[in-house]
Length: 236
Length: 236
DNA sequence: GAGTGGTCTAGACCACTGC
DNA sequence: CAGTGGTCTAGACCACTCC
Image 1 (spheres, rainbow over the protein chains, first blue to last red):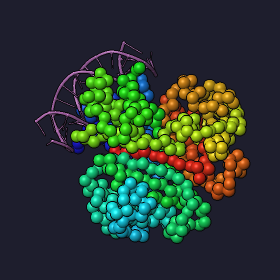
Image 2: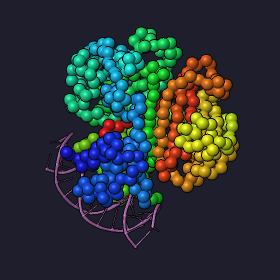
Image 3: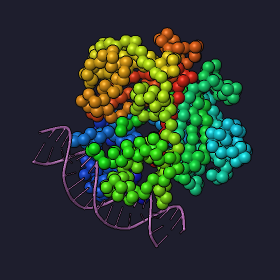
Image 4: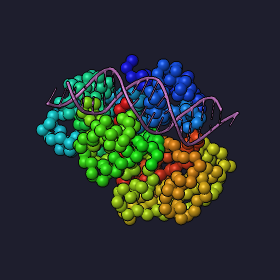
């Protein structure tokens, strides 16, 4: 129960996602919310700012704050979200197949991506994601060994993130995603349900820790027909 | 010179982009910045928060704020950025060809995207974007007529946004982007320098005004080999 | 004019890093 | 320990909307 503004934020998100606050609804004013939650107005404003940043509400000067239409969870949504969270929100049956899990030295290409040397050991995990009965995504994760606790096949079959997050010494701070469209590799064709797609969507994900060090490089290779990326952006 | 925190933000962005503040540099502490800019710490914090959100700096509790590595302007970058701004930042020669400009009733498909009726007139602009001598993007913009001042061919050849922004009654507030990969249409093949690419990257952009109304729907169709989308995300 | 959100202040206490 | 960023407060004034 630390953090009043996060508590307010999560409370309101819950109300919106569960439909107790419908789109177009006007929220109580900031002064009222401050009274309701027994805090100051600036603290309420921090919570509302977060809601606004994440596309839940919209504020209009002189009028109030309004719930936005369906904050639809599309596939893969902007931001840092794990596959498991996504699958859950999409209400689809999903499965993860671990193809390999190795503690090894990185290939030169991966070392370059991770901005490290080929003699710095990494965990390499290759997984296939199945949704609605089809193998659609090939995930190749690489973690600096010294930054994370040891991995097992069981962990990789569940969610690496749910395992890692609470156990990391340094918290995850930010990530950069780069999306491109490329020629499929033999691997893509072999491990995904392919059907002759001529291209593959590659999402390269670089994840940084609290201390500003890069510790993870992941290549997510998506079958193009099932790929969908949604981005919500506010104007500054 | 309204808005102290925005002034500070822009000042620091400028220093970072011009290389006067190098990556890894430690910024002055929040208290020092407050003194420097003659304002309060919370106001400085608002500016730093913006810098952090946009990937310019990274804050570490107990240590300080540090300039992040190259805020690289990739193509098309996350957020709301116009083609002209992008081309400028990429230092490439670019050209815009206006294929058509009509005041018309929308096709049913577009009316649905804009959440309006087929009898609500719209401006429809079709443009081809050329970069480094190649025609790479086909842009189809649709604006609700009643929401914007009249367009001309000259405006469309320059930047619609630079024309619109200062002239809109209601300011632009947020936008939603959806990226998918699809089969190319005959139009794509006809108007872009094609070279037999088997798929096209479609970016659908929905832009909303201050009053929470949708006023623009744009389809940007990108040649897959030249497409690149970068997203920066912080963990909450 | 009353109510709204947007900005700003001057202080406070905390948890964390570094020495 | 002093210095840092993270949170929070209680007030203030402004620009805007609605009546």
